[in-house]
Length: 250
Image (cartoon, rainbow, N blue to C red; front, side):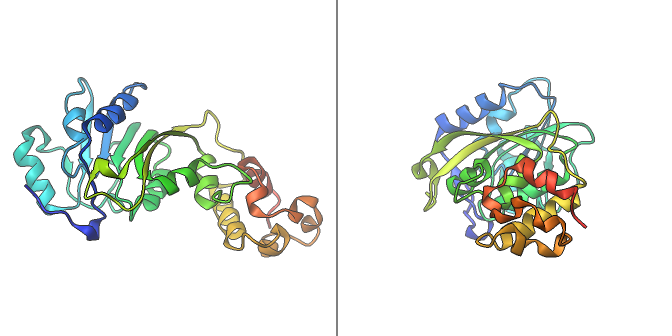
């Protein structure tokens, strides 16, 4: 059939019920263009090919999987982008949805790629390591609330949908998995600029045990740093708080 490559973080979904549940979740919202990340053994792909009236592409870096997919699913010929998702150009010039059982070793990077494309990404439905899924969806005060939580929630509403057992995969990963959905906020969090927002959030959480006053002092004037909000630590601030602070940065 094909070989599994640990170097690519490959854990192929084998539970048909989970595959169908993911696709049913996808169909809850209308879309015209769809991109699948890492089709692998076609556990989800075979159902996506049956969706009528959409433009469909998938991104697969593994030569062996591309050959296997084209042989076993001829409808995929001309629809496979044979390169790394992290290096590919936007697959469509108009709004599209992203779906996938994301390779766990690059799943955070995939989300940052989605942020780069956010003007056109209208929905993401992805399988992640459960720990990362919880981090993306977590709110202020949580021990797992961090950079990726704030950056994603600055632009997307995050829905934690359901957990997936290790035995749903071949080979079974050593961790549990979960499926989440990202949908664009009607209005992104107000911020001075995306760059200032990213810099502030990453700097604040880089020293999360310190108060903001000590963690981000290089980004603000001494006068601004007198505000009481700087007595807090990064994990205590809401996404909106971070956005508001960008307007006070140097």
